[in-house]
Image 1: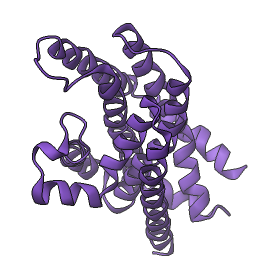
Image 2: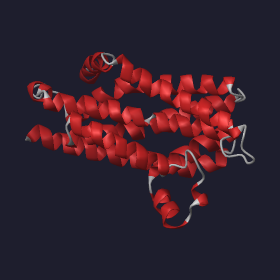
Image 3: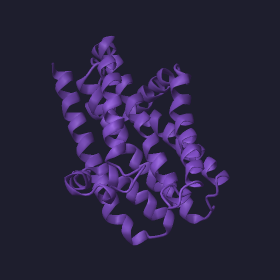
Image 4: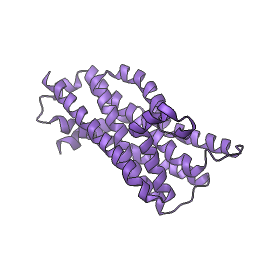
Length: 241
């Protein structure tokens, strides 16, 4: 209940900047349209809508990292958290309060991107619904990274780190190209991180290869749990300070 009340306040803070929210939803759709148009002039299948859609949606979750990180970082910078630390809320309550208002944004990102993909030729079947469910789980990974960054850095620092985060996670996720096109150490490093597994899980669900989902999704869930645990521990340390 306490976390829900705190989440309501955070929702109001997030929607105060509608342009950033709109950008986080419109940019992925624009990229989807652009790369889909490029595919029509390519002699090989690199940006087919079935493989492009899951990757673009996972890419859109990077903005969840920005939203959560900047919100938490701003609360630190304005001493808002210091004033409410006197409440009986635990560190977990605070973290949940930041997560809850971001989940509807994730659902909106998923829905808008899928709708755009349908107009671009994506077939509507149960696999699309299952992919949406898997993507909601994946969105928690990016929210967790944002909370961790916001706990450690200020809102201005998070804004700068975001550019690096988007670049690294996008290149290592295989969103725009297959990692085996580069191979070597680059592919090995990418396989150790959760981002390529997030894209692989979403693509496997959409293609109906459900047997390939479990391992990739388990890696994503493991990283998500670890990220939230670290964020809560660091947040608890900030409370004690």
